[in-house]
Length: 84
Image (tube, rainbow, N blue to C red; front, side):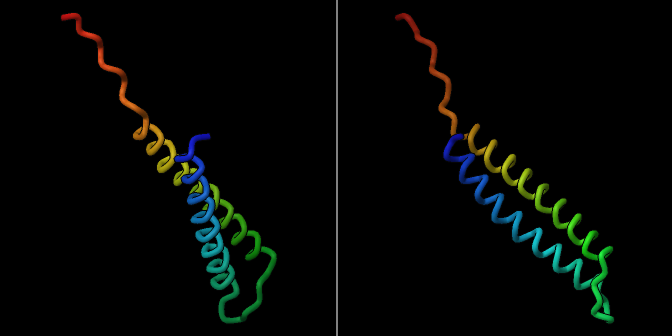
């Protein structure tokens, strides 16, 4: 794994954890409503939503940043030799 891909994976992992936590706790807050009670259904929906956000953020950030940066950092092909 190239250094660009490693850095992109770590950045994607960090942003995925932050986004998943935000979605999970927002889902709990909305699901609890004014009563403040959290049911199993609310936990399930919040967990599934957070998992989806985690994997989509990780995949998109890793793919976009890592693979594009890696291909951009590739050396140019050698020039053809010209016989003079």
